[in-house]
Length: 446
Image (cartoon, rainbow, N blue to C red):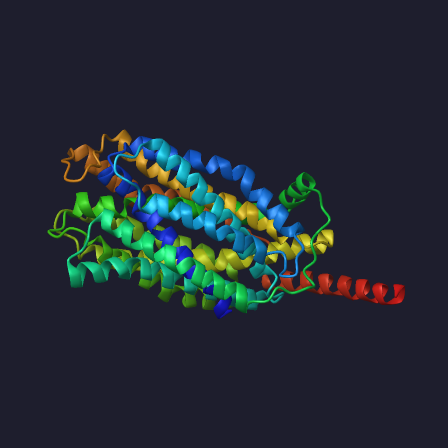
Protein backbone atom coordinates (compact mmCIF):
# COMPACT_ATOMS: atom_id res chain seq x y z
CA UNK A 1 0.00 0.00 0.00
CA UNK A 2 2.88 2.38 0.77
CA UNK A 3 4.64 1.82 -2.55
CA UNK A 4 1.38 1.96 -4.49
CA UNK A 5 0.52 5.29 -2.90
CA UNK A 6 3.96 6.87 -3.28
CA UNK A 7 3.34 7.68 -6.97
CA UNK A 8 0.59 10.07 -5.90
CA UNK A 9 3.09 12.36 -4.09
CA UNK A 10 4.50 14.06 -7.23
CA UNK A 11 1.11 13.83 -8.94
CA UNK A 12 -0.49 16.00 -6.27
CA UNK A 13 2.65 18.13 -6.01
CA UNK A 14 2.06 19.07 -9.66
CA UNK A 15 -1.75 19.10 -9.75
CA UNK A 16 -2.36 21.26 -6.68
CA UNK A 17 -0.46 24.22 -8.18
CA UNK A 18 -2.35 23.67 -11.43
CA UNK A 19 -5.61 24.18 -9.56
CA UNK A 20 -4.44 27.03 -7.32
CA UNK A 21 -1.64 29.01 -8.96
CA UNK A 22 -2.00 28.59 -12.73
CA UNK A 23 -4.93 30.99 -13.23
CA UNK A 24 -3.33 33.69 -11.09
CA UNK A 25 0.04 33.23 -12.80
CA UNK A 26 -1.20 33.36 -16.39
CA UNK A 27 -3.58 36.29 -15.75
CA UNK A 28 -1.57 38.31 -13.22
CA UNK A 29 2.03 37.68 -14.33
CA UNK A 30 1.77 36.61 -17.98
CA UNK A 31 -0.99 39.13 -18.80
CA UNK A 32 -3.57 36.82 -20.39
CA UNK A 33 -7.24 37.70 -19.95
CA UNK A 34 -9.45 36.03 -17.33
CA UNK A 35 -12.02 34.88 -19.87
CA UNK A 36 -9.34 33.64 -22.30
CA UNK A 37 -7.59 31.54 -19.63
CA UNK A 38 -10.95 30.16 -18.46
CA UNK A 39 -11.80 29.08 -22.02
CA UNK A 40 -8.38 27.51 -22.60
CA UNK A 41 -8.63 25.47 -19.39
CA UNK A 42 -12.06 24.23 -20.46
CA UNK A 43 -11.47 23.61 -24.17
CA UNK A 44 -8.16 21.79 -23.64
CA UNK A 45 -10.26 19.09 -21.98
CA UNK A 46 -12.18 18.28 -25.15
CA UNK A 47 -9.17 16.26 -26.30
CA UNK A 48 -9.75 14.01 -23.25
CA UNK A 49 -13.11 12.90 -24.67
CA UNK A 50 -11.03 10.81 -27.08
CA UNK A 51 -7.89 9.97 -25.12
CA UNK A 52 -9.42 8.96 -21.76
CA UNK A 53 -11.72 6.13 -22.93
CA UNK A 54 -9.14 5.07 -25.55
CA UNK A 55 -6.33 4.73 -23.00
CA UNK A 56 -8.69 2.88 -20.64
CA UNK A 57 -9.67 0.43 -23.38
CA UNK A 58 -6.11 -0.13 -24.57
CA UNK A 59 -4.84 -0.52 -21.00
CA UNK A 60 -7.41 -3.26 -20.36
CA UNK A 61 -6.36 -5.00 -23.61
CA UNK A 62 -2.59 -4.73 -23.13
CA UNK A 63 -0.60 -7.90 -22.51
CA UNK A 64 3.10 -7.88 -21.69
CA UNK A 65 5.63 -9.57 -19.42
CA UNK A 66 5.34 -6.54 -17.09
CA UNK A 67 1.51 -6.58 -16.94
CA UNK A 68 -1.10 -4.38 -18.58
CA UNK A 69 -0.90 -1.26 -16.38
CA UNK A 70 2.85 -0.75 -15.99
CA UNK A 71 3.79 -0.21 -19.68
CA UNK A 72 1.31 2.66 -19.99
CA UNK A 73 2.48 4.30 -16.79
CA UNK A 74 6.10 4.10 -17.93
CA UNK A 75 5.30 5.48 -21.40
CA UNK A 76 3.49 8.45 -19.86
CA UNK A 77 6.54 9.86 -18.11
CA UNK A 78 8.38 11.68 -20.95
CA UNK A 79 5.14 13.19 -22.32
CA UNK A 80 4.04 14.34 -18.89
CA UNK A 81 7.42 15.80 -17.93
CA UNK A 82 7.72 17.82 -21.15
CA UNK A 83 4.21 19.23 -20.62
CA UNK A 84 4.96 20.16 -17.01
CA UNK A 85 8.17 21.92 -17.99
CA UNK A 86 6.44 24.00 -20.66
CA UNK A 87 3.45 24.94 -18.47
CA UNK A 88 5.36 25.73 -15.29
CA UNK A 89 8.36 27.47 -16.84
CA UNK A 90 7.02 29.36 -19.89
CA UNK A 91 9.15 31.92 -21.76
CA UNK A 92 8.27 35.61 -21.79
CA UNK A 93 5.71 36.88 -24.26
CA UNK A 94 3.67 33.70 -24.69
CA UNK A 95 0.10 33.83 -25.98
CA UNK A 96 -3.05 31.80 -25.61
CA UNK A 97 -2.02 29.17 -28.19
CA UNK A 98 1.14 28.34 -26.22
CA UNK A 99 -0.94 27.64 -23.10
CA UNK A 100 -3.55 25.67 -25.03
CA UNK A 101 -1.04 23.47 -26.89
CA UNK A 102 1.10 22.52 -23.92
CA UNK A 103 -1.88 21.93 -21.67
CA UNK A 104 -3.11 19.36 -24.19
CA UNK A 105 0.31 17.65 -24.17
CA UNK A 106 0.44 17.65 -20.37
CA UNK A 107 -3.08 16.25 -20.00
CA UNK A 108 -2.28 13.45 -22.45
CA UNK A 109 0.61 12.46 -20.17
CA UNK A 110 -1.68 12.59 -17.12
CA UNK A 111 -4.23 10.37 -18.89
CA UNK A 112 -1.64 7.73 -19.76
CA UNK A 113 -0.42 7.75 -16.15
CA UNK A 114 -3.54 8.09 -14.03
CA UNK A 115 -6.07 5.79 -15.74
CA UNK A 116 -3.89 2.64 -15.48
CA UNK A 117 -2.68 3.75 -12.03
CA UNK A 118 -6.18 4.13 -10.59
CA UNK A 119 -7.45 0.97 -12.31
CA UNK A 120 -4.56 -0.92 -10.73
CA UNK A 121 -5.91 -0.11 -7.24
CA UNK A 122 -9.17 -1.97 -7.86
CA UNK A 123 -7.12 -5.10 -8.69
CA UNK A 124 -4.97 -5.07 -5.56
CA UNK A 125 -7.79 -6.24 -3.25
CA UNK A 126 -11.34 -7.58 -3.39
CA UNK A 127 -12.21 -6.69 0.23
CA UNK A 128 -14.66 -3.80 0.87
CA UNK A 129 -12.76 -2.22 3.78
CA UNK A 130 -9.25 -3.03 2.52
CA UNK A 131 -9.98 -1.12 -0.67
CA UNK A 132 -10.73 1.91 1.47
CA UNK A 133 -7.35 1.43 3.15
CA UNK A 134 -5.61 1.29 -0.24
CA UNK A 135 -7.28 4.43 -1.52
CA UNK A 136 -6.79 5.99 1.92
CA UNK A 137 -3.06 5.34 1.68
CA UNK A 138 -3.01 6.88 -1.76
CA UNK A 139 -4.96 9.89 -0.49
CA UNK A 140 -2.52 10.28 2.41
CA UNK A 141 0.41 10.15 0.00
CA UNK A 142 -1.36 12.62 -2.25
CA UNK A 143 -1.83 14.89 0.76
CA UNK A 144 1.90 14.63 1.44
CA UNK A 145 2.44 15.82 -2.11
CA UNK A 146 -0.12 18.58 -1.62
CA UNK A 147 1.54 19.65 1.62
CA UNK A 148 4.92 19.61 -0.10
CA UNK A 149 3.45 21.89 -2.78
CA UNK A 150 2.76 24.37 0.02
CA UNK A 151 5.85 23.76 2.18
CA UNK A 152 8.33 24.37 -0.63
CA UNK A 153 7.14 27.96 -1.27
CA UNK A 154 6.62 28.45 2.48
CA UNK A 155 10.24 27.57 3.26
CA UNK A 156 11.42 29.76 0.39
CA UNK A 157 9.34 32.66 1.73
CA UNK A 158 10.21 32.32 5.44
CA UNK A 159 13.92 31.58 5.16
CA UNK A 160 14.90 33.23 1.89
CA UNK A 161 12.21 35.93 1.36
CA UNK A 162 11.63 34.34 -2.03
CA UNK A 163 7.95 34.45 -3.00
CA UNK A 164 5.41 35.53 -5.56
CA UNK A 165 3.26 33.49 -7.95
CA UNK A 166 5.86 33.26 -10.72
CA UNK A 167 8.55 31.98 -8.35
CA UNK A 168 6.14 29.45 -6.84
CA UNK A 169 5.35 28.08 -10.30
CA UNK A 170 9.07 27.73 -11.07
CA UNK A 171 9.91 25.97 -7.79
CA UNK A 172 7.05 23.50 -7.99
CA UNK A 173 7.59 22.83 -11.67
CA UNK A 174 11.23 21.89 -11.04
CA UNK A 175 10.29 19.77 -7.99
CA UNK A 176 7.62 17.89 -9.97
CA UNK A 177 9.98 17.33 -12.89
CA UNK A 178 12.51 15.69 -10.54
CA UNK A 179 10.17 13.66 -8.31
CA UNK A 180 7.76 12.18 -10.87
CA UNK A 181 10.22 9.64 -12.39
CA UNK A 182 11.60 8.74 -8.94
CA UNK A 183 8.28 8.11 -7.17
CA UNK A 184 6.50 6.54 -10.13
CA UNK A 185 9.57 4.36 -10.68
CA UNK A 186 9.31 3.05 -7.09
CA UNK A 187 5.67 2.13 -7.65
CA UNK A 188 6.48 0.31 -10.89
CA UNK A 189 9.29 -1.67 -9.26
CA UNK A 190 7.67 -2.51 -5.92
CA UNK A 191 3.96 -3.16 -6.64
CA UNK A 192 2.87 -6.36 -8.39
CA UNK A 193 0.24 -6.89 -11.02
CA UNK A 194 -1.75 -10.00 -10.31
CA UNK A 195 -2.11 -12.52 -13.15
CA UNK A 196 -5.76 -13.28 -12.36
CA UNK A 197 -6.76 -9.84 -13.66
CA UNK A 198 -7.50 -10.91 -17.25
CA UNK A 199 -7.97 -8.49 -20.13
CA UNK A 200 -11.64 -8.39 -21.17
CA UNK A 201 -12.69 -9.43 -24.65
CA UNK A 202 -15.20 -6.59 -24.99
CA UNK A 203 -15.37 -4.24 -28.01
CA UNK A 204 -14.77 -0.58 -27.25
CA UNK A 205 -18.19 1.05 -27.76
CA UNK A 206 -20.24 -1.87 -26.41
CA UNK A 207 -17.95 -1.78 -23.38
CA UNK A 208 -18.74 1.88 -22.78
CA UNK A 209 -22.47 1.19 -23.11
CA UNK A 210 -22.26 -1.66 -20.61
CA UNK A 211 -20.37 0.55 -18.21
CA UNK A 212 -23.01 3.28 -18.48
CA UNK A 213 -25.76 0.73 -17.77
CA UNK A 214 -24.31 0.39 -14.25
CA UNK A 215 -26.77 2.56 -12.28
CA UNK A 216 -24.70 2.92 -9.08
CA UNK A 217 -21.72 3.99 -11.16
CA UNK A 218 -23.76 6.72 -12.89
CA UNK A 219 -24.92 8.00 -9.50
CA UNK A 220 -21.41 7.87 -8.06
CA UNK A 221 -19.98 9.61 -11.12
CA UNK A 222 -22.52 12.43 -11.04
CA UNK A 223 -22.08 12.99 -7.30
CA UNK A 224 -18.33 13.09 -7.70
CA UNK A 225 -18.39 15.54 -10.61
CA UNK A 226 -20.73 17.88 -8.72
CA UNK A 227 -18.61 17.86 -5.57
CA UNK A 228 -15.37 18.20 -7.52
CA UNK A 229 -16.76 21.11 -9.52
CA UNK A 230 -17.65 22.94 -6.30
CA UNK A 231 -14.14 22.42 -4.96
CA UNK A 232 -12.67 23.45 -8.31
CA UNK A 233 -14.49 26.79 -8.07
CA UNK A 234 -12.70 27.51 -4.79
CA UNK A 235 -9.15 26.42 -5.60
CA UNK A 236 -8.18 28.93 -8.33
CA UNK A 237 -9.68 31.76 -6.24
CA UNK A 238 -7.51 31.16 -3.15
CA UNK A 239 -4.79 33.51 -4.33
CA UNK A 240 -7.22 36.09 -5.72
CA UNK A 241 -9.17 36.15 -2.43
CA UNK A 242 -6.08 36.67 -0.28
CA UNK A 243 -4.46 39.24 -2.58
CA UNK A 244 -7.53 41.37 -3.31
CA UNK A 245 -9.95 40.86 -0.38
CA UNK A 246 -7.68 40.32 2.62
CA UNK A 247 -4.86 42.50 1.23
CA UNK A 248 -2.03 41.23 3.47
CA UNK A 249 0.97 43.46 4.08
CA UNK A 250 3.46 40.88 2.72
CA UNK A 251 3.48 39.33 -0.75
CA UNK A 252 3.23 35.57 -1.11
CA UNK A 253 1.72 34.84 2.32
CA UNK A 254 -1.13 32.90 0.72
CA UNK A 255 1.11 29.85 1.16
CA UNK A 256 0.33 29.92 4.90
CA UNK A 257 -3.36 29.31 4.20
CA UNK A 258 -2.55 26.60 1.69
CA UNK A 259 -0.38 24.76 4.21
CA UNK A 260 -3.21 24.87 6.77
CA UNK A 261 -5.63 23.51 4.15
CA UNK A 262 -3.32 20.65 3.17
CA UNK A 263 -2.50 19.66 6.77
CA UNK A 264 -6.15 19.70 7.83
CA UNK A 265 -7.07 17.59 4.77
CA UNK A 266 -4.43 15.05 5.79
CA UNK A 267 -5.79 15.01 9.35
CA UNK A 268 -9.32 14.56 8.04
CA UNK A 269 -8.70 11.46 5.90
CA UNK A 270 -8.36 8.96 8.81
CA UNK A 271 -11.47 10.40 10.43
CA UNK A 272 -13.63 10.00 7.31
CA UNK A 273 -12.29 6.49 6.70
CA UNK A 274 -13.12 5.62 10.33
CA UNK A 275 -16.59 7.13 9.99
CA UNK A 276 -17.23 5.17 6.79
CA UNK A 277 -16.73 1.90 8.68
CA UNK A 278 -19.50 2.88 11.12
CA UNK A 279 -22.10 4.51 8.86
CA UNK A 280 -21.07 3.40 5.35
CA UNK A 281 -19.00 5.08 2.67
CA UNK A 282 -21.73 7.08 0.97
CA UNK A 283 -23.16 8.40 4.25
CA UNK A 284 -19.70 9.48 5.39
CA UNK A 285 -19.17 11.18 2.02
CA UNK A 286 -22.48 13.01 2.36
CA UNK A 287 -21.41 14.15 5.83
CA UNK A 288 -18.26 15.61 4.32
CA UNK A 289 -20.26 17.60 1.76
CA UNK A 290 -22.59 19.00 4.44
CA UNK A 291 -19.68 19.84 6.71
CA UNK A 292 -17.96 21.89 4.00
CA UNK A 293 -21.21 23.53 2.84
CA UNK A 294 -21.91 24.78 6.37
CA UNK A 295 -18.38 26.15 6.82
CA UNK A 296 -18.03 27.96 3.48
CA UNK A 297 -20.13 31.12 4.19
CA UNK A 298 -17.63 32.08 6.92
CA UNK A 299 -15.48 33.73 4.26
CA UNK A 300 -18.18 36.29 3.42
CA UNK A 301 -17.42 38.10 6.70
CA UNK A 302 -13.69 38.61 6.05
CA UNK A 303 -12.18 41.83 4.74
CA UNK A 304 -8.93 43.81 4.54
CA UNK A 305 -6.54 42.93 7.36
CA UNK A 306 -8.37 39.70 8.30
CA UNK A 307 -5.66 37.43 6.95
CA UNK A 308 -5.24 35.26 10.07
CA UNK A 309 -8.99 35.16 10.70
CA UNK A 310 -9.18 33.14 7.49
CA UNK A 311 -7.26 30.27 9.14
CA UNK A 312 -10.16 28.68 11.11
CA UNK A 313 -12.34 28.57 8.02
CA UNK A 314 -9.53 27.11 5.93
CA UNK A 315 -8.89 24.42 8.55
CA UNK A 316 -12.55 23.37 8.63
CA UNK A 317 -12.85 23.29 4.84
CA UNK A 318 -9.63 21.28 4.51
CA UNK A 319 -10.77 18.80 7.15
CA UNK A 320 -14.10 18.32 5.39
CA UNK A 321 -12.56 17.79 1.96
CA UNK A 322 -10.59 14.85 3.39
CA UNK A 323 -13.79 12.90 2.65
CA UNK A 324 -13.63 13.86 -1.03
CA UNK A 325 -10.62 11.65 -1.82
CA UNK A 326 -10.55 8.28 -0.11
CA UNK A 327 -14.29 7.52 -0.01
CA UNK A 328 -15.43 7.93 -3.65
CA UNK A 329 -12.24 6.29 -4.89
CA UNK A 330 -13.00 3.26 -2.74
CA UNK A 331 -16.62 3.25 -3.90
CA UNK A 332 -15.40 3.04 -7.52
CA UNK A 333 -13.95 -0.40 -6.85
CA UNK A 334 -17.31 -1.55 -5.46
CA UNK A 335 -19.25 -0.53 -8.59
CA UNK A 336 -16.62 -2.28 -10.73
CA UNK A 337 -17.35 -5.44 -8.74
CA UNK A 338 -21.03 -5.05 -9.63
CA UNK A 339 -20.12 -4.86 -13.32
CA UNK A 340 -17.84 -7.90 -12.97
CA UNK A 341 -20.61 -9.88 -11.27
CA UNK A 342 -23.04 -9.04 -14.07
CA UNK A 343 -20.70 -9.42 -17.05
CA UNK A 344 -18.13 -11.94 -15.83
CA UNK A 345 -15.34 -9.65 -17.06
CA UNK A 346 -12.90 -7.23 -15.44
CA UNK A 347 -13.25 -3.85 -17.16
CA UNK A 348 -11.66 -1.70 -14.47
CA UNK A 349 -9.89 0.71 -16.81
CA UNK A 350 -13.15 1.42 -18.67
CA UNK A 351 -14.55 2.76 -15.43
CA UNK A 352 -11.42 4.59 -14.43
CA UNK A 353 -11.12 6.24 -17.83
CA UNK A 354 -14.62 7.64 -17.38
CA UNK A 355 -13.68 8.71 -13.86
CA UNK A 356 -10.52 10.41 -15.07
CA UNK A 357 -12.47 12.19 -17.79
CA UNK A 358 -15.10 13.63 -15.45
CA UNK A 359 -12.47 14.50 -12.82
CA UNK A 360 -10.58 16.63 -15.29
CA UNK A 361 -13.83 17.98 -16.72
CA UNK A 362 -14.98 18.98 -13.23
CA UNK A 363 -11.69 20.75 -12.60
CA UNK A 364 -11.98 22.63 -15.86
CA UNK A 365 -15.66 23.49 -15.43
CA UNK A 366 -15.05 24.71 -11.88
CA UNK A 367 -12.14 26.89 -12.97
CA UNK A 368 -14.20 28.17 -15.91
CA UNK A 369 -17.11 29.10 -13.63
CA UNK A 370 -14.76 30.85 -11.18
CA UNK A 371 -12.84 32.90 -13.75
CA UNK A 372 -15.83 33.74 -15.92
CA UNK A 373 -17.70 34.90 -12.82
CA UNK A 374 -14.85 37.28 -12.02
CA UNK A 375 -14.82 38.51 -15.61
CA UNK A 376 -18.61 39.04 -15.46
CA UNK A 377 -18.16 41.35 -12.46
CA UNK A 378 -15.41 43.28 -14.28
CA UNK A 379 -12.58 42.00 -12.10
CA UNK A 380 -9.02 43.12 -13.01
CA UNK A 381 -6.53 40.32 -12.28
CA UNK A 382 -3.28 42.12 -13.12
CA UNK A 383 -0.77 42.38 -10.28
CA UNK A 384 -1.40 45.53 -8.23
CA UNK A 385 -4.67 46.38 -9.99
CA UNK A 386 -7.43 48.33 -8.21
CA UNK A 387 -10.91 46.80 -8.33
CA UNK A 388 -14.36 48.31 -7.78
CA UNK A 389 -16.51 47.28 -4.77
CA UNK A 390 -18.78 45.41 -7.19
CA UNK A 391 -15.86 43.39 -8.56
CA UNK A 392 -14.69 42.51 -5.05
CA UNK A 393 -18.24 41.51 -4.07
CA UNK A 394 -18.28 39.21 -7.08
CA UNK A 395 -15.06 37.61 -5.87
CA UNK A 396 -16.50 37.10 -2.35
CA UNK A 397 -19.75 35.57 -3.59
CA UNK A 398 -18.04 33.28 -6.08
CA UNK A 399 -15.58 32.05 -3.46
CA UNK A 400 -17.96 31.60 -0.51
CA UNK A 401 -21.42 30.86 -1.93
CA UNK A 402 -21.28 29.37 -5.43
CA UNK A 403 -19.56 26.09 -4.36
CA UNK A 404 -22.33 25.37 -1.83
CA UNK A 405 -24.87 24.77 -4.60
CA UNK A 406 -22.64 22.07 -6.12
CA UNK A 407 -22.08 20.38 -2.74
CA UNK A 408 -25.81 20.24 -1.94
CA UNK A 409 -26.59 18.90 -5.42
CA UNK A 410 -24.01 16.14 -4.82
CA UNK A 411 -25.71 15.28 -1.52
CA UNK A 412 -29.05 14.90 -3.30
CA UNK A 413 -27.53 12.56 -5.90
CA UNK A 414 -25.67 10.33 -3.42
CA UNK A 415 -28.41 10.20 -0.78
CA UNK A 416 -29.89 6.84 -1.92
CA UNK A 417 -26.68 5.26 -3.21
CA UNK A 418 -27.46 1.50 -3.23
CA UNK A 419 -24.15 -0.34 -2.65
CA UNK A 420 -23.69 -0.92 1.08
CA UNK A 421 -21.06 -3.10 2.72
CA UNK A 422 -23.54 -5.99 2.92
CA UNK A 423 -24.43 -5.78 -0.77
CA UNK A 424 -20.78 -5.54 -1.79
CA UNK A 425 -20.03 -8.70 0.18
CA UNK A 426 -22.84 -10.54 -1.64
CA UNK A 427 -21.45 -9.31 -4.97
CA UNK A 428 -17.99 -10.62 -4.10
CA UNK A 429 -19.41 -14.01 -3.12
CA UNK A 430 -21.10 -14.27 -6.52
CA UNK A 431 -17.87 -13.33 -8.32
CA UNK A 432 -15.83 -15.82 -6.29
CA UNK A 433 -18.32 -18.66 -6.92
CA UNK A 434 -18.20 -17.98 -10.66
CA UNK A 435 -14.40 -18.06 -10.56
CA UNK A 436 -14.45 -21.39 -8.71
CA UNK A 437 -16.72 -22.86 -11.40
CA UNK A 438 -14.44 -21.53 -14.15
CA UNK A 439 -11.35 -22.98 -12.47
CA UNK A 440 -13.07 -26.34 -12.06
CA UNK A 441 -14.13 -26.34 -15.72
CA UNK A 442 -10.60 -25.47 -16.79
CA UNK A 443 -9.18 -28.36 -14.75
CA UNK A 444 -11.67 -30.81 -16.30
CA UNK A 445 -10.74 -29.56 -19.77
CA UNK A 446 -7.07 -30.31 -19.04
